[in-house]
Amino acid sequence: MRQRNVLMLEPQDPEFISTAFADASGKRKATESQRLDIVIDGKPLRYWWRDWEQSESDEKVPVADLVTMLSSTSRREANDQLIQLQGPAVGQRPTRAEIYYCAACFDVTDGILTVEIERTLESVIWRAFGWKDEYQDGSEGALIPNSTEFKFDPDAYDSVLDRAHDEFRRRRDRLSRLLHRH
Image (cartoon, rainbow, N blue to C red):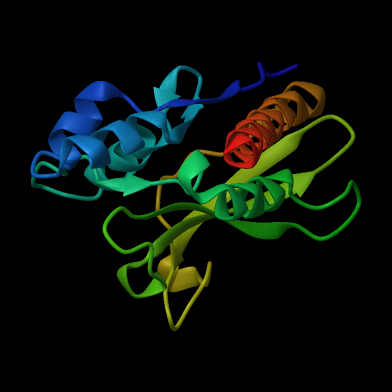
């Protein structure tokens, strides 16, 4: 049997923050340092994306300054993204989930990196990475050539998402307790 990929949700890499947010305030950089990033097999997904794009280009492709919604400063959006990442139930049609957004505006006009998610009894499968904008979402012309298909153990995958949900819930509850004390 083929080895499974490992999904992790980890704080964004400090080197990425210092480069992508070089002109940002200290507060913005601190906020970004708490945002969770999607890491597969120890490598942030944006680096996988760059490698896929690099294979299609003669020029050096920079690491995109795209980010997830997985931040305690936007808990509702974070939980919405986590729900999307759960994907469909076993046996249902694959669904598309939004992965990365423009770090400046989070708007679809700048493009959102998406992925098709399918669930089987044995795996959660990510495939057909592509771009979503006002006109398309995962259509043939928006797909990224050479993108990798990832297969995750469903129990380990769900555990990662559940831990993130729990962490956002704990932060919300802590904030609520602090606000009610005053």
